[in-house]
Image 1 (cartoon, rainbow, N blue to C red):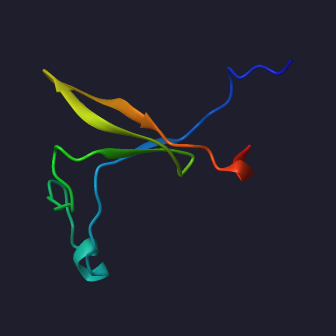
Image 2 (spheres, helix red, strand yellow; image 1 turned 120 degrees about the horizontal axis):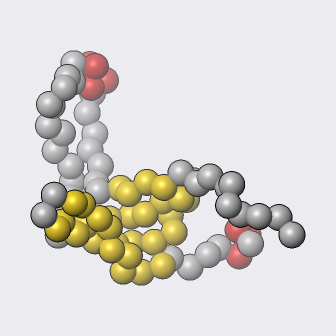
Length: 80
C-alpha cells in the first residue's frame, strides 16, 4: 500500500479579487494596498491544487489568522 505521507498539495484561500491595468500592477511596491471586491464578513474559497473544495470564514484570534471550514463542496463525477 502506498503511503500518503509524502504527497504535497498546494492550498490557497481566496479572500477576494480585483481588476487593475498591468501598468498599475507593475508599479505596486512593498506596503501597497489592493482593494478587493469582498469584505471581512464574506466567505472565502478554499482551493487545493487550484481546484475549489470548500468555503469557509476567516477567524482572527490575537495575532493568529485561521480559516474555519463551513461547507465542503461536492466533488464532480469526473474528478473521482
